[in-house]
Length: 406
Image 1 (tube, rainbow, N blue to C red):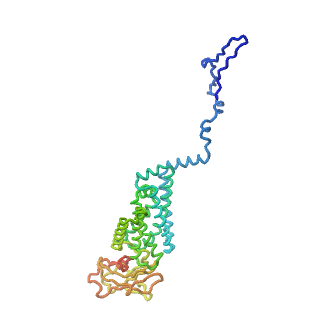
Image 2 (cartoon, rainbow, N blue to C red):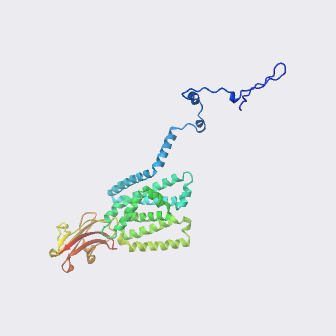
Image 3 (cartoon, rainbow, N blue to C red):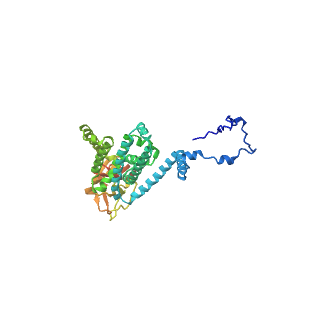
């Protein structure tokens, strides 16, 4: 309650009234002001209204405000800086993969984690820029979005960079299977780029599911022989294709709809198509984890089975017999029968199956040796030659190359 500053009327002893007039604002004396300015001592003693309303700012709030301002100003640079960190982390995983193929079995946990993460992600945030922008407008949604994408990126990086060295060893870069390795490398690089992963890949359910399907298929080609040694490579490919179809479908179709006749028929058609595509395209997929450790051609062999001389270029006049020796590493066990295929300028000259070409070799490897001599040599011998190591299903494991001149 504010009191009235006007003095009250005090009646005199004789009964008459006397009016006390308060001074008008115009008649009030002017406050004295020194030439140096107003008196700051009085103004400084005035209460701080803002502190009375919001309270004093704590040290934590000040620090948080500065961090928020810094992130808002340099957000894009920080994203790229984190991409460099992610790439460094991926390279460390790539180096770790050299410690042994048996670690590949742990990829199964990462594959399951990514699948669950994608299902939850698109249930929470939806698909498409418009749907996600609407959801992200709610308090705390953006933090959850960044948290889930961060976890997914780390899982992707672990799987892709772990798989790269095995595909590198199994790829022949002058053959079509180099394109599969190139796509795998592109996916690994994408997983380290926050701007592309968050703003493009995870915006659309179809794009994210295709990315996962390719990663899943490539990783399963390592996981299956790691869990089930001596598995035939073609069997691993077809099994990986089947699992990929079901995983891809589950990201798009709710669980309650999987039992309907229409969805079941669609899955069956997609499964048949995927198996057919993988079977036809098997020659462009590296047969991981098998790879050729050594491959060469020469005129004769030593008593221990090695070549006495390895040649890459030779004259046609000295060719009387050519021998090829290859050592194939089989970390996943021997599930395939191998063969040598000699080709001259891309045309097949000789095919030597494992039952006639296999000879004793180092532990953990399959050594094949085949010879080309006499009437098996074509009349025109100059040009480019290759000796391919192939599986019985036509997958290229590795090759030796040499050139004959005249």
